[in-house]
Image (cartoon, rainbow, N blue to C red; front, side):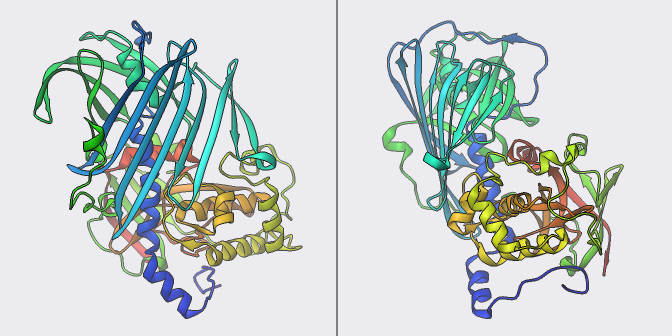
Length: 512
């Protein structure tokens, strides 16, 4: 333990040199998170709560199999493509969608593949689905089927299969079926309707208010269309869709300069030189008005948040614990670990702690492998502070630091031994819960190389909530760790609200 309260692990110099060469800790970690978010956004999920409006209905059926191709652009440079298919099946339809993404990650090329398959009824309400996301190293999959008002979810296979029930507020429509739903109804200017959506990657339920705002001419690949303009919002950001008279989607424009354009099989899969030149790592970074010296030694940091409405984040994690906000001035104070722990692990049963001790679909703290590893690391240790330190050091020292472009899973990270900040944070949280220490995930910003980058870390309850960063080997974390959100993926996705909007002004800072 250092004088300023940070725990460090010492490894062989050759290993450290190799890791520095392969992986910039902050940059790649933030990119891994945002590529997952991009994959979800391209599938048009997580719409904000809508005002009053008509509910959805279909007015015409799709009588034969159809396939469509789209090219995906980021700020006018091609980064991927998508192919979707629908065909009549039973009393409804079978839907399949594949997305291929290629982006530059801090100088290294990365790829993301997702597959969605679903059976839906004639109103596009989901009956069952299968979702897969993979980056080549890690594979995440989940399937589900409706049973009355519940969605029965399954991850893993055979003896490792995990099943859970999820109460649905509406009969869900998968985002992958949204284009075909628009094709199945007659669109008229001025109408609006609501569409309940389910995102299988984060298990979030949202409802979209879709407005048909007008008609306008649109030219694609030298062909002119008279198109309907459809508008909605994603986390307070506009999403615009153009469809033709038959309801076929021609173009979509979203945040950060992401655009999808209708294409053909021969055109969609072709990449040209320079298409991947843009680096998502830098696009999503936030540069403050002045630099911070010795950031890892900061114990107090005051920042003014501009360009965003901080109110949506107050209940999610921006206020409380080591952080205080007053009129958009955020003060972050590095906490001090307790000298003695207030309990022996496992924490005695308490209702407040239950959500922070139970497993989640990607935080598999009750899995035998996770439990076995946590016991092997902690041994007979009953002091939560010392046990948490051992778990932090093990994750930092044993998980290879490189980007994993998939939904983070503690169990998969343990098996593969690789991951970015999301995998480090998720695995550490699962190991903590497995030994009876309440743990939760944080998402926010951290400072490095004169910019703030999006980052994930962990908090453990050790008598007080103490921050832990298994990617950077800090406990507690330095004051440049700015927490916006506490929680798993269904909450973390809200960070999209700050992209390209957040501005930071440094008011003051103090070192040890």
